[in-house]
Length: 522
Image (cartoon, rainbow, N blue to C red; front, side):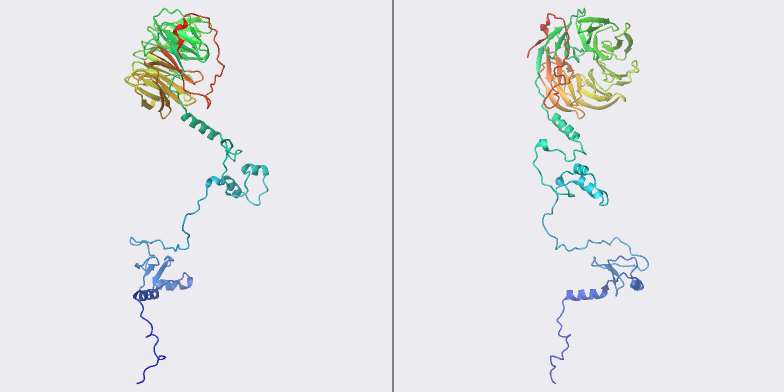
């Protein structure tokens, strides 16, 4: 038998053996094939077991009548009587997209500070068919750029040259206000007094009000049975020619309308003086004990006594006393009218604050009882007339803020010492508090968060009263250590210029002797 030639051999026998993974791949490709989405093969798609609503990314198996996702390795069963839906076991995966051609490394992020989005929006919104716009308007919108979203080099400008490119559209006022507010927050508050004056004879009594500063830049201070006037502009000291028959003067208060000074005495009398002429105008009765609190509201003078009585006087008419109320059980030591004249607040040693409406002064609008000590420090907010601040004594030591319209306590902050006086500063939106036992300090607070900005030490005994200068740049304090101190706390502007400048009205006081009690120490 002749041996077969190489040409007669079956080529299939010469085919090399395929690997196992190659066989499986061929079988799978023969069993599954995609069916195109054409109207001609619609019957065959139903016969092969695929619903017309089957997603386009599915493949139908011809042999097994099953469909599977090209993104899944294991096939899932299909029901021929309804559209297949997603089951709990069906979890499609994200296709593996080839990112081989994607360049690796850092991507470019544009700098938005160098873009001009306002001008770009204007150019995109305008149509080519529109007529030409005015060149001046275009220059105002974009004086040095003709490209949309064009990148521009950063220029190292001086601070005075860094202005907004859209000055015609946007205002710089907000940034200027923010800059001024930052300067106020970062300002330096001097902790040493600017001037110190000797004030012997001041009565060490927490319930008295012996200091006030008027619009003419004069400070009135009661020392024993005399009243002294100190000119803050010239540092000149004068004594009021009063002949008070009482043991001591318990309160002083300037009128906001003129140079009238109200003087309360320990003999239950209230005197009204014209300081410019050194003349006592009248003596008003109505109380049965010393008058320790005074408050002006136009031509109305309200006085509070040790017996807890409030008297309202109209100083223009002979019968001055037109109303008398008794809503406090103990001495009234704090009294103040709001800046708009709508509310009156009185604080007493009975731990009560009474808030009155000017329409009805006989009955309190609200009676505030949250304090646990005498309330002497009372101050109305100058930029929010219905906001009231009150301060309690030694056993309380809280500063509380009230809404006078509703009587609700808005907030409260505890202090380390008894509170004798409170003052607001409108320009800086700050509160100044004078304290007695036990730290004898003056504190400056930022409203409304009530962060303490500074503590001013210098007095060696409790602070009895504090008063604000007419330009709201300085604070005067009188203490039981028999000293009067002037503190420069609120400078106007960056250079600290005052509003008054040199425009301080001079009172032509008659020369008097015996003014050595109130002398300048430093």
